[in-house]
Image (tube, rainbow, N blue to C red; front, side, top):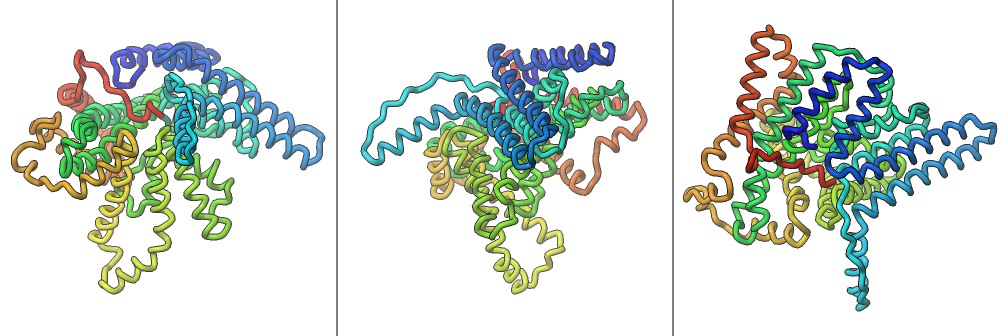
Length: 498
């Protein structure tokens, strides 16, 4: 079930109504049933995988808690706790590996053996990737580690823990919640709060604007160009690449905002997942603002356990590269994703090495680092670096990515902007105009947020008649200019494939 589907617009109000009228003891059971139904609308049989991950991590938490209360020596306790964590990780990651990476691993092995003149016949597994498997697996595994570290208690109530893993607003595309935030909130259901509901509704409207008006409109142009890059080369690809940066931000950010808004109406606060990432002045700052729940997950559960920055500079750089390469692989079973992660890792490694050179250049040119112009220049360079890496993310495969870069460098066709040919890639001039205005709205909203001004809170502070005008006008705008498929079909979210 998609957020931007008619089914969800019927499903969510029903869930809300029943949630707030059933007795307090029944609320978590109702949310659990609703969450499992929500997931099963894609493919009912894959609910078994989520249940498997839930049972394994739930039991591992109880075992770790039991070990802590045992009278064994400290060394023995640590050993058996590590064994419990290792078993939990192994079983969960093996399931993830089979459904997401088995064909990629076998194909890579075959290619490597072919280099040394060894031909290996490998089977191709016809496996459908379970939607959201990477998200709920990582959320469940973080619970195991949190219990091991003593950051949270081991949840005794299986149904409450199952709800933590399957909570439907953020189930299939995040944010990847931490147990000490979400699990504790699920333990104490809240009464209906009108202020939270109003804020949640505004968040959902903004999320639908990002997805239906912007992301889905941009996707038409990007898909046409990237899927036939040999025909639409040069400046077509440059424009498509610039627009893809906006598309993926609005698509994934839109999902996260809708999820946060829906949860807030249910009285639950989810963590922020995007914080004006394209206003970052460095790539490292960008990754503190983009997909925050995943970036912080890798920091807490991979980077720091590897040693973080506590070791030598070389070890720190190796740790950074490992994190970003794994992050790339997490996003998809293709070398293009690994290269995407590696490029962003290299940015992190090279940045500190070139810092003194950049400082020296600033001094030689007598530039003032505190001026608006200098900050805008930093943002622009950061955007270009990040946008270049998006080529590997969006391309259908690594070979296409390299072909796209070559075309962008060597095919010069600026006439497409004057001949009107740019409007022959799925979007006519009218839709380009709507897209441009919508991007400006996004930029203005992000600038306000960057400055600490939350527009929705300013709206909520107004009288009721003003708020209702905003609600009605916003909904009509989305319905009128939003992108709808044939028969008003909804478009999927990019991160569902991960």
